[in-house]
Image (tube, rainbow, N blue to C red; front, side, top):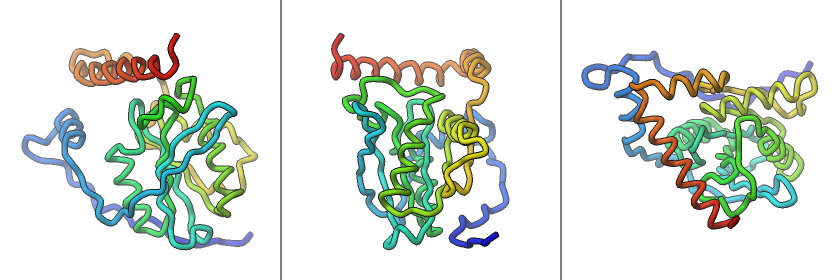
Length: 221
């Protein structure tokens, strides 16, 4: 078997728990959400629309190395009510690009201000779009190595994509990574409905309602 080598993301430093007022999951979650981050190493992205069905497109923000076909590609999938502009998506892209990867920050259907591009909605089992993007960049861009990474709902999609492929994945797919994946949806909903998590539930519901209002403007009735 031929062994292929290439860029890899540098090992993370040893984890140091936060101290003081940032100690605890709620404080860190809110702080990381509210804190503005900059990624000066990450070049301006190329916007690209992928036709995933005859009437649906998804928007991606792509960061290509100078000779893209010679570099592996990371496809990043965001979480519920996220987008390609989420800070964790940019943070991952920043580290991966600096390590020699091409990066595609992929919006799920209707996300990132793209309600007009899809008559339907995204959901936790919709792996078709990521698969379509993967196969297009292999065929059109000559990409020979692909890794898929997802956060939360995107992590669920990454794992389901691997399961859908089973024993017959595209030969270019080198691996998948799931960060805090939403695996048991009903358990996640119950956790979100706990009194101590009311602010997170409110935020999700507010975003979903706003999205449906925008969707209704694009597709009345």
